[in-house]
Length: 142
Image 1 (cartoon, rainbow, N blue to C red):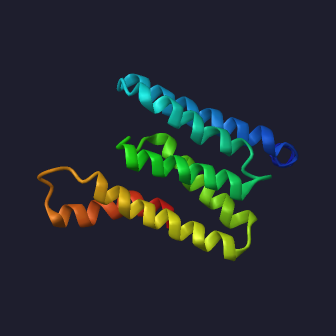
Image 2 (tube, rainbow, N blue to C red; image 1 turned 135 degrees about the vertical axis):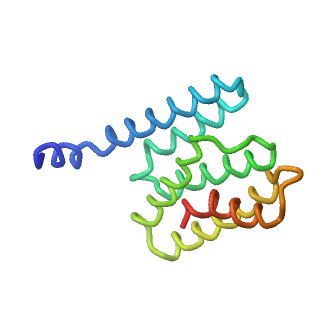
């Protein structure tokens, strides 16, 4: 087992490519299954930064935030590929100083709040909206 971990540490780009491929496949499969073909560019735009996340953590995070903001603005609902944003936030926290990672966390939490407000279903009670929305969106971020 130690040899496997050593090999994985020596090949981080390959590991990140595998992670990107797995998330991309899950995102593409669910998009096609639900007939959301407009989501395919979002899937691609969120998977590519995962490949370079260790060498360019700030740039990869910035791309994911821009894509997430476009999702919220255009009304494209959250999907499994949005886990890429959480992965890139983790990478920002792990590889960058706090002066960069704390604003990244604040940006993600603000984006979660906007997404919850934007995607509230009509007829949903305020109590349900206040309990489920923040847990579903801000929970993984924290």
